[in-house]
Image (cartoon, rainbow, N blue to C red; front, side, top):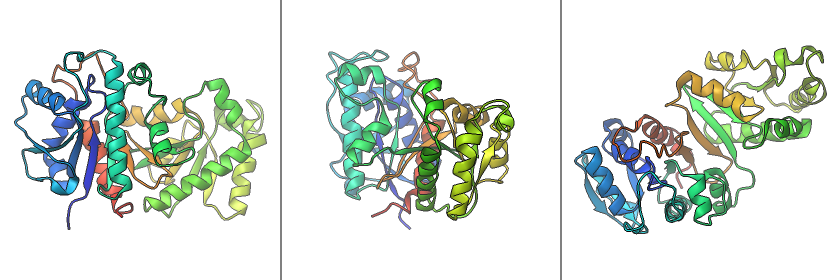
Length: 332
């Protein structure tokens, strides 16, 4: 069977994206599992090959079907959008923000056309995006807009444990206000759809508690009594396999042991801490609810080490492999 084609947009050229893309292209496990197409700028790739000292031949292509998928070859769609006279590695730059957006946009176009089975993204820099007048706060918002998807879902996967997020980039106080019965019901239903699309139709989804010991029937807060428990009970009555609220100090452990096929985390750090403490480098993000598959590293551009050849490619490798794992459900 042909290995799926995975698009890898280069991310912010001034960050570690080019380095981890090059290192992943040379990774044996990646080569044996996927056909990768990097979307970026040849000048930046050549520089990353130089400072990583990885002997890769760059093959310029216009379409993934033109790729030479052999060991030692990096297939590149070259957008040629970085002016090296203005470029400085490790620094925020509006040009780099615009370039990163263009790599993502091209990768999404390839996925929308069915030319690639998944997009596995390298990190972008929010400051560079802003400096480049790109009016999106991050990857999720870009993918949502360019795939016409309203409110895409974020799911983390690490060692088989899957975690969704009811709220993401809002303050903790705002997150508490967003924990309502209707929002929980809507998210559980959509999360279940995402799981089914990924081929995970069986099993129970757990809803994490918000307060210590899930509020102890109102002793430590009323969110469980007023919103979370009623949402779970109504979902069960409608036939959804869901449990909760389960105390946040145990629910992730139980999911890791196989009790639950996924967990709905109620706020950003609740789920991030659980997954990244388990294995920071292998915590991979999936953007769900879209017509295409996107997997991603969940670390930043690491400008402080960019260009030094010391960035770990483990997360990028894992993101590509996870893209391969679920890609059969998205191949057009």
